[in-house]
Length: 280
Image (cartoon, rainbow, N blue to C red; front, side, top):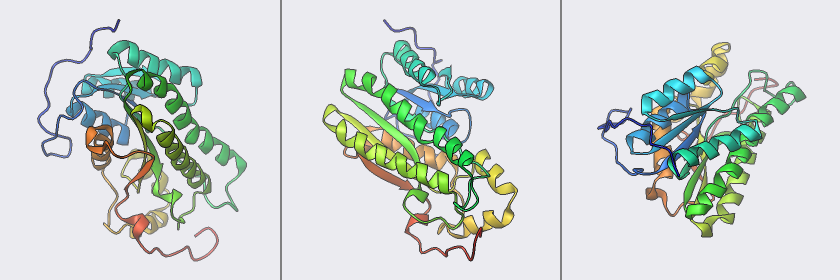
């Protein structure tokens, strides 16, 4: 028995980016971690615009509740590093809406002290590992049983282009963790393909979010080096990433699994200049 759908009835006519959107996700339930801001918030809006029932998970109660209210969705307070809270998140999503059709495992972090392997200490490595590949693992494990009940589902794991290219502005712990997300997504995509469940990694270039602005504000030179390597000459907007999330969540990507979907402004395909010395 499912509870009543808490969403108000308010049809959306256009996406956050300004153009009309498809209604590819009507009747489907999408769970988004880190939904309170940045990419997560933009994705919650886009998936709701496409008809999904959105479950907004965030450790920040104020931001998470505001996101859920903005999209007529359900907020679940979640620390994605806590296995019990992650299990409770997907349980509540299923009990409320009767399915878990999409899991966008988006919550992650990057630390200012994460840099060259010569300078970043083990504390930074452990913290990044705790809040990047570990939550992806926990969310996939919690979502899969509900998807298997209905024989369908799309899991989208946020990764980064740094897993496939050397970084001119090194963040060794983050790079290693993103490689783990790619490998995990490939394996799960193969393992559950015959059950109608698709698993893909969404590999991103730099996105103009509060987190990135915070990381780069203290080092304008580092920010300039990062931007110089993006062929499109700018950072992505969260709404552009949300459009990719909607594609991977929908049946338009029905023949894609165990793959890596690059939305990076061309940075991983470009010839980049290596750093000019230690710590550059």
